[in-house]
Length: 342
Image 1: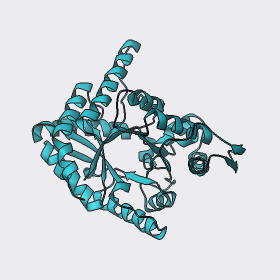
Image 2: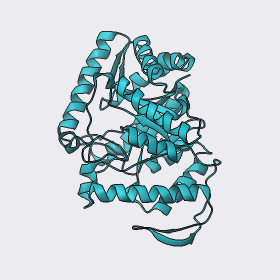
Image 3: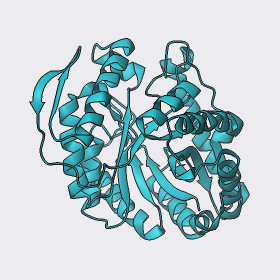
Image 4: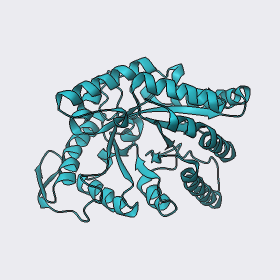
């Protein structure tokens, strides 16, 4: 079975009056509640700042969506760790785990270079803060009281409340784009997701994860691995191609303004380095009829061993187009994914 998720970017509504933005939030909350009835496994919200998306505090979106749903898993992919004090991250995670009735997923990220730079932080500092904070977070998830003496955090016998609900802890996720980051996640006991690369390259990354997990004596399988792709689905292939062409244009325009591309940084990777790079492969974009889309997703998941698929459906399109795409994906693609054998 392939578990289908929504990856929600929550795009900015350009040149809108405040009242229109409020209505936009309300309509998207309705959309996310509808995702449960359509059969999605859950929603991962993204965190972005200073333009292009309305998701500077995705934990608030989780809390709002939790009250409208009963079965959807809810998380952030990922919460930008360097912006926060580590104990605050744990406290919010623990509260959300209760507010979601134990449906929370934990995802973390270093952050996007141009957003990090806007607040006067270098990527080197962001990575240091991230690594230190994850040590603290993992300790707080396993111990009720923690002491720590590091570069950015120092405290004695800290006892945050409440304690998280899921035991031993909510599932942890890390976005990776390299063998090294996959191995690091395996040692942490974190699931991984990746995007952009070819399916062949994704398999190499997942192989590194599986190898490291085996060395650590941890069993790793399809439930620990996720592929994230952009999707355009329609009743006919021609209509889907029109949607995909428009979406690809929007994506390319966004990346053209993104210094990560010129610097060859990989988006959303918790451990990218200055020499890290990425290319947006053709396999990143999946379009077609429901049957065609399902066949492509199943093929990529089988080739890599991924048991989860994160869908960015009709990214940047009108709410009406996004809603139609989700409805079609839910009614006709999801049943095929859930029947698929990996």
